[in-house]
Image (cartoon, rainbow, N blue to C red; front, side, top):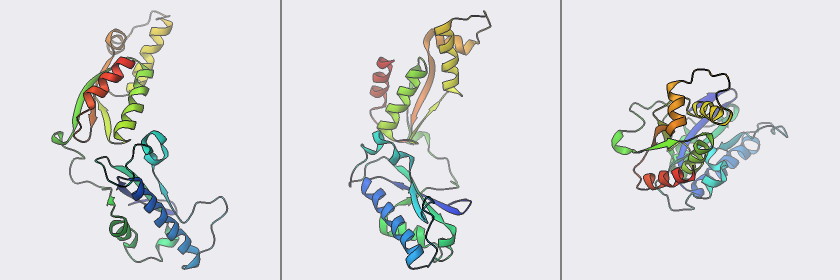
Length: 217
């Protein structure tokens, strides 16, 4: 659980649209109970509800469209239940987490994991050469659509987009001031920036997907 100003935040993994909508319904019930049962003052017209749900994955249409409706798939997405502290003081200890675990059967996102987030045996890795900023953004878009935001990452370089943009400026405008071009930028100009795409689960379509992305660059 994370705490922030007047709200506490509880993050859970969900796998289907039905699970997410049930979490939203639970949030509405709690929020209604704040005023009807626990006699808290009505929220301001433009203020946040006493309880609401946030999820980056749910807000991205290309990801939401691929979520299973009822039958869970292998992909996990994160939803955060945001609860007003004034309401929470009126509830039984751990009631919210227990309700979500038992009624909706969602798994809590560990806040302080005691072991690595993932082991090498549990991931899928494949290399790709990024040719420029547009190629990078297309890669991010397709990987998010295929595996879900937060379920993959890039390894092998830092500040990837900044380096690609530096190389792109030189490619488009030329080296106007005959300034020194660092070795890595020159390598990007010559053949692209090599990085590894790492999916945090075992999948069998990563290399074909990267080949498709490479052809689109």
